[in-house]
Length: 114
Length: 115
Picture: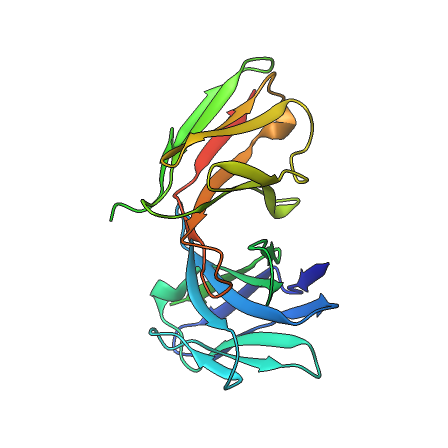
């Protein structure tokens, strides 16, 4: 079985400041890792994913996440946030082989302050 | 493509009533998922289907909950009888195939309030 821990339930940050949202996972098998974003009153959308290869993955809107196998982490970062980044962010894992079942973290609410 | 469609978007009902939530997945997607999101428990997988067949319903909380997928373009999640603790946002998601690289596409959710 897999589990995901997002220790920070809320992260306030000023506009144009950097941000890091933390994610740690636990699994007995190899996994794929994902970050999803949920804007107010909307469903979740895939932000970025790590499947294999380079441990640093990027999204089209400036976010990046780095897979660290030794620390079992997949932290999400952005060097300069915008008001429009205000949303809830979910880290997720699924086995790299087998079923589609995804395990989500409890989410981190990013609040960008003008 | 219109994306995953859910109806209704909001539902308010009284305890003991039957509630039916509906979902239309993206055309051509073989997998369909039902999730529940609450402040206390976060996002929980309730059940998922592959080619209209339920594969894993271990997340369904109790017998009051049931889900069906009569065809590839429609699924329902039914709660009978409903209770206040069922209040949550219910999401439907679909995914193209068994390939492990495929991601899930979420609908906008149904916000259920049971009084």
